[in-house]
Image (cartoon, rainbow, N blue to C red; front, side, top):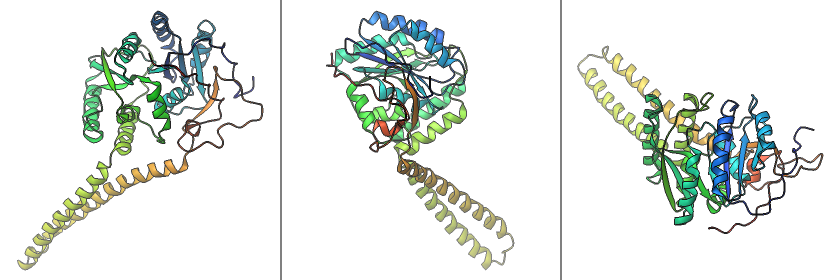
Amino acid sequence: MPEGRNEGPDEERHEPVVLSVVIPMYNEEEALPALVSRVRPVLAELGVAHEVVAVDDGSGDRTAELLAAFRLGWPELRVVALRRNSGHQAALTAGLDRACGAYVVSLDADLQDPPEKIPDMLALARAEGLDIVYGVRADRSSDTGFKRWTAGVYYRLMRRLAGPSVPAQAGDFRLLSRAAVDALKALPDQQRVYRLLVPWLGFPSGQVTYERAPRTAGRTKYPLGRMIRLAVDSVTGFSAAPLRLATWLGAGAFVVCLGLLVYTLAAFALGRTVPGWTSLFTGIVFIGAVQLICVGLLGEYVGRIYTAVQNRPTYFVRHDTAAPAPPQGSAGGGGAAPGSASARAAGGAADVPRVPVPRA
């Protein structure tokens, strides 16, 4: 089969999809068997039409092979394979762009967030007419002390910068209505942080609490470097506070310089100019550091503007098992409107036609 061609369309669905479960995956061959053994019975017991959208984020292990094997006996499993590793949030975007359920749940493959809570989320959304149901971690004792401390700092900072609507200890385990998914797809953001974008919508929301479990298998895909990058994207994408911080640092440096000027004039009047070298050296170093910090903060925002102006696709789809194959020789991704779902994805199969589903 030529590269980029689909494996073939799934069997035609005879009823609208009520629930889509989007699972980004990157090198999850060790966790996949446990994931399937827990997710499949939970969804089967719901008794509603559903699909599981597994987004293979350019895995280099046997993740794609195992997904193909599981799909042979699980018709509700749908595989969206990306051409390269695009990152967790981009893979999540790919799944949200292609999910066709009236409700969409996002779930990580490491099973730290329990799929057994999905029925509770769906029931709460239907009973109270909610567009968003957050999975909130009530107990993180399975995480290391450093992880808990950094998570606490992150959420406190985000609630201060982005507003109190950001739920504390809520990651990417959540349920979204079709209205919320469509609203997210309409946003033009390139570097997406959904744990801040979703609360920003302001749609009616609720919470389901759970105990965070240890990782089932494999290694974490969020080491310290990626956690720092996520924090930087979160701050620069949702607040201009760092720019105001640069202004206050500049004002503080100006006050310090005035004090050093008074000290220098006093030392000159007393004939003690040589000892002033230390204060002069300290002042120059301080001002230089403040300038570099301010330039760095400006660079972060200019970089985001540069990325937005380029409007490059966030991810490239190799194939989607639920979509028809594109004609031979066709090039996907051209002519997309800025900010649209097709502008974020290129090179893949056509989007799945959606059937309107009345809300329960």
